[in-house]
Length: 104
Image (cartoon, rainbow, N blue to C red; front, side, top):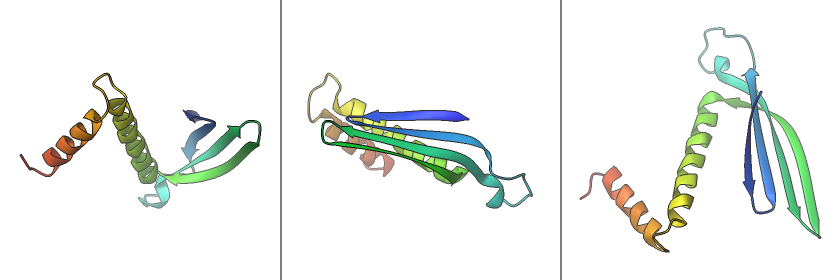
């Protein structure tokens, strides 16, 4: 089972992805479900601690979209905290959006 931890300030989200949920039968939607689990740990000492684990099933397309969303957010976070100073990430984001829409 593959594991991806996502850490933040006072929390940890762990996604585990295993095998396909069932044997391939030639049906694109039914054949593309993956088994896995999600763990979340939230700790805000001294007042709160929360832990949960849940078995899940994802469609491969949903997991791919989630991965792409995390990758974009990670890129934006790096840009916002690079050595060019505050505000530069907003300029780059606007430029990227203009280029995506074909504007000069």
